[in-house]
Image (cartoon, rainbow, N blue to C red):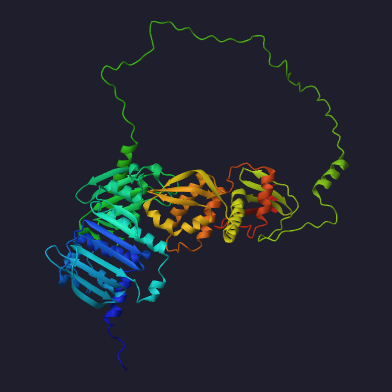
Length: 607
């Protein structure tokens, strides 16, 4: 029987290693930019095409590499940062595994130019699928220029499962932000398809946050700082009124490395105890500096989850520091009196004060107009109430019952009960529900959800038939545009124009000249902002998938009647009839129930 265990060829082993390190284009950006930082670069350019599928190029002005180092950098387990095993526990640099470049060249076509300041000529290396194609001397600037083309060209399955360009680009931008927030003293540039997304100059941390997250972010941040023998904490936390539900900016960094830490997040949230609206999170940018020997960065393959040796102690310090910072913000200014200030006092002891006099009419008798009944006397006989019962019954019969022989038409819908086409009797309850009696009980219709369903189907039909209406604005509206939303806006440009938006970029703002006909100018801006932020925060989802559904739903939720709006009888009838003429009258597009029945049996049980 032959042996069944054998060594894998280097090409396959490299591809397996690449699968652990290089998961998507953002992984390549992270590894190359971190290498540039470790090389002492002060200016780093990241150039991306087709969200990294076609090209990822990183250019830095670092110290560069010699010819030998340039070649060894692509060998597995080659590194400049580890000499012995103990070095793994005292790292201050970003990359150290010696797997980044070998993993990248295993699944891409890579070209690199690099030169040190003391060398006259630089080194050019071309590698494809771990196979060296060319190595030569070239004229090059000091630093390193590395271009990664056709990522996963030799692993079709991995390339096939990459997300849409907008999704992959968002991941690249998130990675870029996390690095740029740690190094405000380094100039960063990010280009996508020859369009500048970020151009960051060296600055302080607050200015860097503004440049990345929008101008208004830094103005609502409170600085925190704490230092002791175990940990140094510094950074910023947002004011309570700027807390958000989805798009909050929450960042933890330890020793210059981004990390996820749900336990420390709870410490921050508890520090805001009863200061935040429900289901919201504050912005925060918090940096920890600890002894590298007290943390383990290899808990997770992406190194975003980190284990602390003194986790509980740091948790307490973090919570107390955030609380103290918020306390300083909320304390009222103390009262102070300047020298020479005269305190006004209108009380003069020498003056006599007259007691206020009460005036009442002693002859007033409240019982004269309404005499009290004497219960000793028999009560007078009640008036005889006459009713024409036959007339009353005939009136009721003619109003409620249909003419004999006329069969009510019925609509086909997904609910288990039938809805008569005859004009129903209905009323509004709590300015939220439309209520109408049925043979089996009472039907409650959520007016907002019903209108959402009606408008949604109407909008989807118009979008399909390309008959959407747009209203031009007399004076264009301007909306501040977060730089991180710019590539997403380009991706959704055609879809947004299809529903009625007409806009163009004006620096860091969006100038909107036309909006969907169903929306007011203020709600149109709100809906557009909501659409962009929700698309930006989609996880593991193709943004282009069902984009028309999500845009239509965001629009109709804003345009539909709200809970608390008083409806006329005609308005209730219009919503009622349109709802039960729609394809799905039971649920909203996002799965919420529209109709609820209270049966006659349930009502009778109450009695």
